[in-house]
Length: 263
Image 1: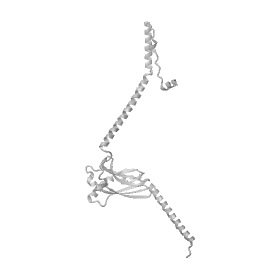
Image 2: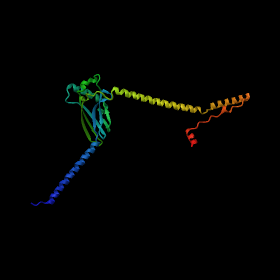
Image 3: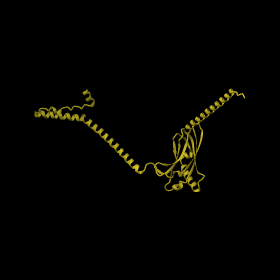
Image 4: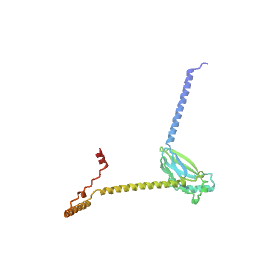
């Protein structure tokens, strides 16, 4: 049996080249998809508590993607598996969330990490028939539709299960942590105010002392009149004039002048 080695080598070379080309194509395609994923918008919808008020809840719609989102539309509906009472509660909550203007009209533009908050619901007092017990049985489906800058359409669906909020018992700091921090802030504020008052007082005192070392027209006129009166009195009484009485007060040298003299 004669083997054509040249043909065999050519076949293996063709297979290797085809495999390399396929691997290159797959790598290029994967890199392209990765680049697209890094620049695509991604709209996230979640249920959150209002800061420091755990009984107030709302939906937060955030663009957590790397690109801007356009023409964002959000549609809320109760989960199909809910019983009659839970569906009624879900509908009440959805109606409250939908009162926000952007929930009705949509969002024209949502940049990266920008967000929108819906109206909040209160779990105190059973407002709109919503209390804590029936709220924790609510499941809402949020369907989100949006476009990127190239008018590519995206669709996301979120299942918002209120029972996942169970166990959330506080937000922010406890009272024992908040009071010392607040007192420390007040202490720092009072210290800052005290320093400002001291600096202003020092500045005003400096200006006052500076004004006292200079003659104004009225003070100079009074001083000259007093000196003439003393001279006239001394001549009438035959008293020799005390030159030290009218000794000129030398001006204080500034720091720069003192340094210049000491050189």
